[in-house]
Image 1 (cartoon, rainbow, N blue to C red):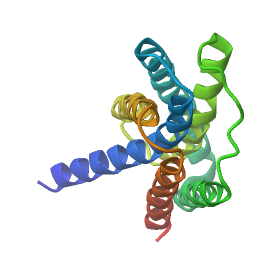
Image 2: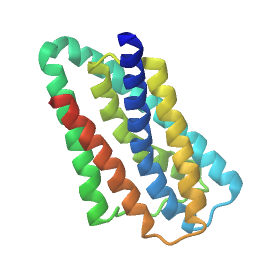
Image 3: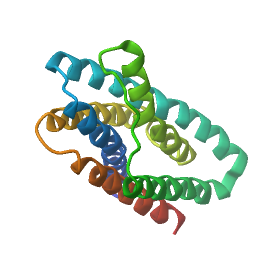
Image 4: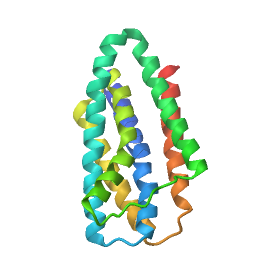
Length: 186
């Protein structure tokens, strides 16, 4: 019974982190969507973002597992600190404005740059999760699913609403990561 509760807690943590990381794709997707994208482009952009949200945390988890072996008992504090810093950075950047550069979602390079920009945070979280030896398959699939889903929602919403909603999404994701970082430390 105790192991089932522990697994459920791990699942809830991974899902909440994946959704929080997807907020970048959501908030920037609103901006891209407001520039006008076709449904076919929404699908293409979202699939590339989902792929990057799988690859980046995967690389991060492998890096985190290695660092976890090197750091031993300190790994929990380091990984919690990484999440706190990442969450704080997301909150601060949402207050300052995203400063999003013009990306042309109709070109392969534009899609790759956009996907990379919203997936870099997943690498850092992957490092933290690698130090905790989280479930690899569950983690990367959840990150990919939520990265793709949140980008679809952001791109579609961007076609419909104003730009001001985007920064709030990034701030909300930052708060979630900051809270989990503090939970890991304490």
